[in-house]
Length: 439
View (cartoon, rainbow, N blue to C red):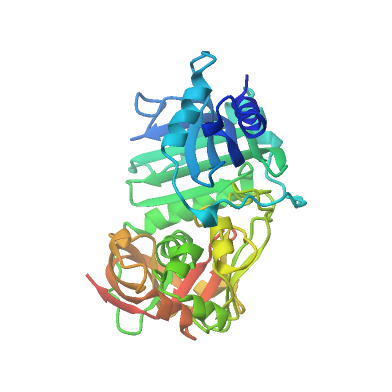
């Protein structure tokens, strides 16, 4: 019997007519994931080695949140049990009860609301799971035959399909299918490209991604002139995402704002304080078709909706989970799935090809060392960026090593900061003026 069915039966029973009064439930919430995953990898130019064998796995797992009769809470991660003993779930309930805690703001379970229509499944991914997986092997063969001759290649392709079940004691009962396709590859562990969405990569997208990565690898073989005080810094989309993850995402979390542990206070949001440049907008949007950060409903049963965090540079709201919304005195918002579904946009955004043409003296930052050690609240950074690409007169000319020093919040507030649209990435290129010097 499926995990969701077992859990639902169990929790209904202990809410309505418990076998033991000390295990009576007053409210509950369940989220269960069923998934099937097919994966294939490359390590050091070798496909399907002992390190990256073709694999198939399936599983069911979930999260349970319980409110007991006395108002205390418990939460737990669960998996489909191997045991068929009738007392298995009773023992689990006893353990969850022993781990209960008091949190009056967390006991609210939202009533069901209508859900949006969001495309989160691609049937082409399901076909791979069903056995039509030659596309994965063909792609790996193509990578290895087309790679630069001297490059040592790593890579991986993963296709996933499954169901997501969300149930609450207030009457929400949602089950929907979702898919995921993730692929990445790298040369000499220096230059790489990746794709992650809820749909298969299109042939044209794969060609563009491959060409871009091979070109970057080729440029890395050439030395370029050092940077100067007037050199513009351009963060590649993956770097923009990393900076958002380190500095922005945690500081827009409702619990941090309420506790006064973030870069922005609750009063700053209430006053709609100007913190970014007036051309910049930051939003959570889980409603975009087949994006990795899109969904129908949050794990807490809140319908997906677009949430503007910053508009025209002004603070609007942090993202609020149910508990935070109760404390804030507002409705829960959308929540990001990491940086997926988080969108930064400049009012004068242009395509990357056009932006590149306008860079007279610049450096393209593909990766940095030690970003996770930087203080997320202050926004300040001092980062080494070896293996960056030098841009001169609108052309990438070769490799250079640089050090960056600055403050990401100041970068986002500066009039000189722009974004450039990437057709291959969710996040934009970020063009900015910050401290840069050659290593």
